[in-house]
Length: 444
Image (tube, rainbow, N blue to C red; front, side):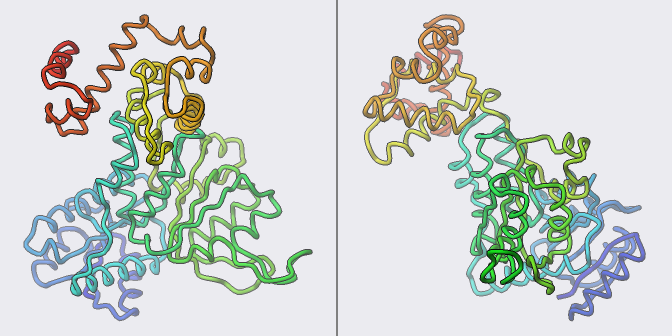
């Protein structure tokens, strides 16, 4: 491929250009965005690898000019950026950048991205399109309409488009596992393994063997060679669940595997390549752990490239009604179920310390106890008893019913794309009754 390397840092520009040329690519270099535009005007390029911050014309403006030009569809842009500019790099992906790399990086880290570009072009030429992010699939998987969940959904879509590491932050039970699998399923690595490591499940002396594997005879009980999770995830995604639980003494080897994309088995001496995309999750504030001296700062910055903050359910209670419907459909698995509006209102008042996981298990228990009927009476005993449940009905019974009714109307309108007739039918209401209730709640 013909590649244009753009960087005002001379050493990086020259070494990257030389290394790419050594791989058989035709490479031209430019010292800033303005010179890059002149090069693009004078000749055709397949890929532009550009720094973000440069004099005269920065990488973001260069990207915009390329994507507005006549060759927009035939030129892919890879951005090089420092950690502090990652939000800008994320914006660049929205504008059409192929991917981005965070500095410092090794020149060979560009090669997998170039290979992806070549594969996509080959697939396009053979009329076999590469898997793309499906907004509909993401929306169907990540349920809710709150501002917080909309931000999560957008970050999942962006994460699926890149190979950058992702850090999922949130309390236990908010759905970090679901987001990790969704990102993998929507990414270009979807045809390769998805491997999860529960970092809290293994004692310190076993986590190294679990991650990297071991050679026969490397320790007592190692009677045969064993492949580790990095090895098993080759080409795909490695999900490090509860990465905050990895012991500090094991973090330097993990950093090396992520940074240099190589590792060695316990008791082994040869280096093994690790072409894996890392998604990590944490229930703790890692900056606090860094301050405590129990988490490496350099490892944190390698993991925290794209961060997705998942709000607890108590901060997005407006998402409870659609979540209830979604989860009950899963629980029922084709069987009939019903839920009283009063029960939905009660669920929407609970604080859910266990988040979506607690909501799921509560609904599952009530569904089984009620033989498919989710009622206020059964729920009251499941989420704190009658007295506590009644206290949660702030504003009284009628106010709670009105609140739940309004949420159901809004959800029906959202699902029907604003079509009131379809929304009324979904709620099994007459159109005239539906319109009256919209007027009652000021929804017009």
